[in-house]
Image 1 (spheres, rainbow, N blue to C red):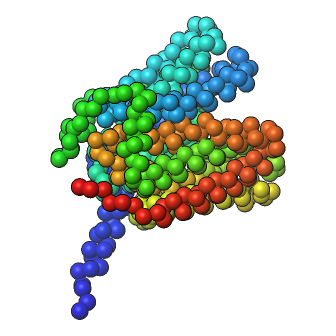
Image 2 (cartoon, helix red, strand yellow; image 1 turned 90 degrees about the vertical axis):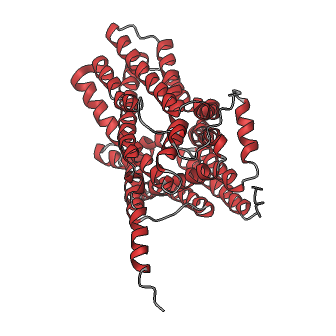
Image 3 (cartoon, rainbow, N blue to C red; image 1 turned 90 degrees about the horizontal axis):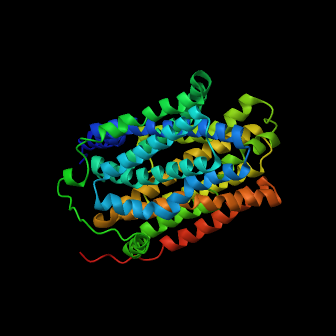
Length: 425
């Protein structure tokens, strides 16, 4: 007999999958605040990097800026996650926002007084990096409490979309502030953009203490020992291990190091002297992630599965390998756009699986471990793609890094085929 109610139920299920996280009012407000904060992050980069270049003309300081941004994720992500487990994640995020405000205000004061020295710049870059590592694990934990497990992938995709919106609009608004208000006033105005999220979190009713049935486990924080505790806590769960390895492999072999080499890629493709063509190439990755995230959320496609995430990570490596070897500008733009879509897809899936399967009592630590792998190991992609590019050329370095990543991902596929023991209840 035909089941007539099946079609409406299926339709309703699909409807719920579309932008499901936006059904939670708190998540809507958080995403707006996070998009503003990410925009302010990028505005600060635009203004501070420009003044640093004008004042010091120091490639070493420019390199330190990249290290200061990613190295805190490598060293402190798990510790930051442990703090989010131990204390109210809202307060950890607020501390992160406060450090962002201190960094922007510090730049502004030094620009006003024309007293910026190299050690000032290095200190403020470190403060900015620490702000990011405090924000990230606590935010992921807080959003999990907002939307629950069923809508977590939707929330993670939307968080990625908000980040990409900030990355797209931040440079343009940063340039406008720099031209209209000047560096000092522009970056102080930028500090105010962090305030909406900081103020909303004061009384936002979200977190483990507001989640029905959630157990609040106040474990002590052991510093770097948390890394080994987190690894031991997930070692028997092959899915989490595979997702952490996927995040680490993609970050270490390729990461986003090719973005810093984009001017040379553009020049080799014949777009180096044409501003609009270079801009299109530069924005294609973010546009692919943004549009891909919207499409996936609208259609409810690509539900989280370990092998799907790994397979899409492999396709991402292949797309970047194709970008490295093509000499056709249109093909290059298309491949970078596709790479942006694939990157959002597999990274959102990997993060979702990691959070869903993490033991609740150490979820913040596991999120921190994932962030250490996903963000911290990008420090080394500067070696595989950047320094390697100086030795053998950026096309060969990116291409060979992509090939190495494909081999690594093939090994992960084999790893996920291992039988996994079911944990005792």
